Amino acid sequence: MSDFKGIKVISRLLFVALLLGTFFTSRPAVAAANAAQKIGVVDYGRIFQMMPETKAAEKSMQTAKVQTNQELGKMQASLQAAVQTYLKQKQKTGKADSAQERALQGREENFRKIAAEKSNTLAKKEKSLILPIRQKIDAAVASIAKAEGFNMIFDKNVRVYGDAESDITYKVLNRLKIK
Picture 1 (cartoon, helix red, strand yellow):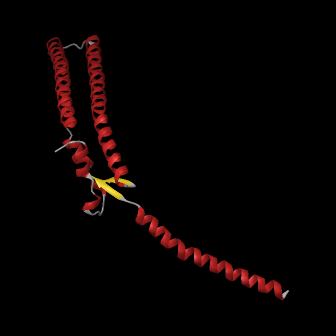
Picture 2 (cartoon, helix red, strand yellow):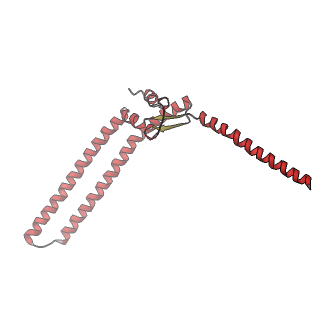
Picture 3 (cartoon, one colour):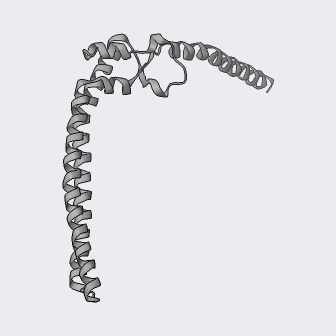
């Protein structure tokens, strides 16, 4: 029985020693792994604004918005003129024309539907113009990150602290040939 107690004490001591050994050896290993990670930042918004494609996309979107606003403005003016004409007629006769009121309501609903469709079309156009620009920037960032051994790249605007050495914005601008 006393041999059993001795084995029990020795196994407990070995277990505690093993736990302490694991604790003290794993902390430097974790610290070394963290030190091996290379994290960089990039000013994505600045690069996006400096891209020549962005300027062309903005110009294209502005043209589309002006055209859409002109079309909707004409439709709205026509609708307002029809409403004004109806109201003047109603004031002269003193009678409401339910058929004409329904027709005007239908025109108004149609106008709202067309305005929503045009808004969706503009949003899709903007997305289709911006997506290739973002993909081009993402490819340049990924290329530099791989070439220089970065594990992660964050947007510069969301970082709390970082040294200038971790900023790859200028490298990305050079890769994209933007001055």
